Length: 383
Image (cartoon, one colour):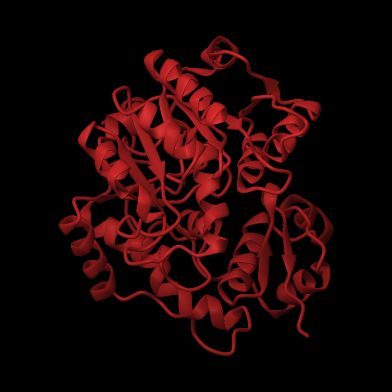
């Protein structure tokens, strides 16, 4: 396959590669950014897994990180297959195109349902769990009309606005992002709705392991998926402090359009949506407000520049050499508790970029780095 053809279709991982990817992303101190850096440095997940203990030791960890075993990865793959789900890598054709573009996109997602629904242009629709009758009706109307215009409706399967958006777009295509494993949907009152989603050609997506019960801190991660897969996100009723506003903030950070439905100033469920409009969100009173804004954003694209790519040409060209104790001391002195950009570290230290990236990987695997939005990093300072 030529590079142009590969770019159009994506990269299909072998079963062996997918197992190595699953092992790597499920291991300690490996987040999406670290995963990508490891693959890009070592050439493959398999080689990166072998390097983890040495990286951790060089970074100053007291003990080796927990590394997911092959048996554990195979067991999760078997659970997924029995559940009717599959794992999709970030460069593969079934991976949501818009999600691929965000910083820290999950390298491997679990998916159940119709992939054709997942890869279509999507509109995120979220809002209050204790939604009003009018809010629910309006969310359903907009979701139905945008679905009929060719958009998949993405939401979080929560009660209220989320459930209304899913139900209204069953016939046109909807995808639910889950905070827990695909086999642990929440809340239980929407289990029947979930069955309807599958029966009508919809899908579910999660980046969490099978068997993972959703916790409060997992829902912002789920909100990140909603914002990531969508070209724009519509907020219908949201209090001043709500998960929907987290989704709106993330959508703005990802370069998505934030849409907001105005509401009564006397209704606390509308304080957040009204604030979004004051802060520059697109005011929505009809579906045309959404469709006119996001239609220019639709174009076939598959940007593989920022994704993890396995090197199938042979052994990795990078090694663990090129970084000594002197370079480690220089980098450690440059880092602190305040977030900085990697380019600033390279300029400040005068170290080669490849050396800086390797040293940061060592600290990351050792659990001594914090990752922040915008690709910034900071040192976890000893108490």
